Length: 92
Image (tube, rainbow, N blue to C red; front, side):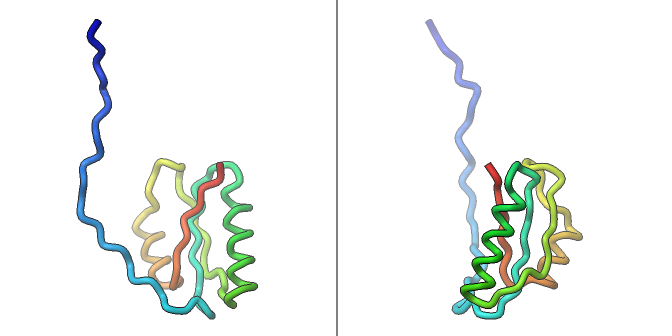
């Protein structure tokens, strides 16, 4: 018997990570909620802990159209303008 595997391997690509802040104190957080179950409570709890431990504040929470979609250009622009750090959360 011969089996056909329709999957393919990911295509490797060069990625550059954003610079990481040396200190989190007082930074503004941007949150990206992906519409999955428990995503909002997870992000809210994380933001509460970052606020308590580092004095961070939530500048913006934006919502994706669905878990599999990217956020739009307007959302990216708002996050770049209003947030120092962005967290994208999943909820399951």
